[in-house]
Length: 187
Image 1 (cartoon, helix red, strand yellow):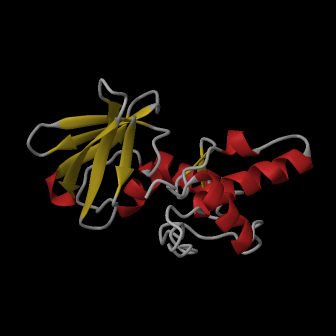
Image 2 (cartoon, rainbow, N blue to C red; image 1 turned 180 degrees about the horizontal axis):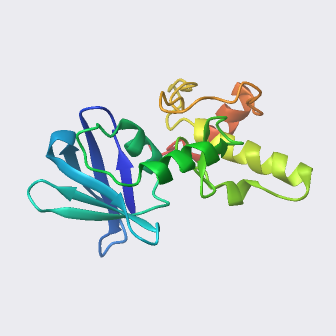
């Protein structure tokens, strides 16, 4: 799986997660300076994005890769891109994320909290509400008992927040969820 992270006006990181023989996650990250990028273009099918570096190296990233919209929002004008009209269309099509409240959903994937809206949506409003709560519990979970909840980590300056969005879980529910699911009891 390919991912984008640490996207800012100086550089971005392309990473890949794979698994070794013991089925442990292995991360391979490459930090890329914007000054080293020659061009970023969608393929003709718009199903992936091609990143061409000045040294001839290139990367193919699926168009549903989380962080892709932030990549385009931070791309300097010096980087060649003939897809600005399509990118502008994407910006106008962004939808609200039911989990984190950012207007950052494209192709049913939130570009901020990475939630898949297909996992949240349901025809039954009660089930959808429970799905949203479950995703919010996972989003705000802590990994150690004395770790404070980070209420702002999912705020991204590249995206606006829906002013009507509300957190549906309480601090007590997040701590109970964390205790049961993410705190390492063996420490």
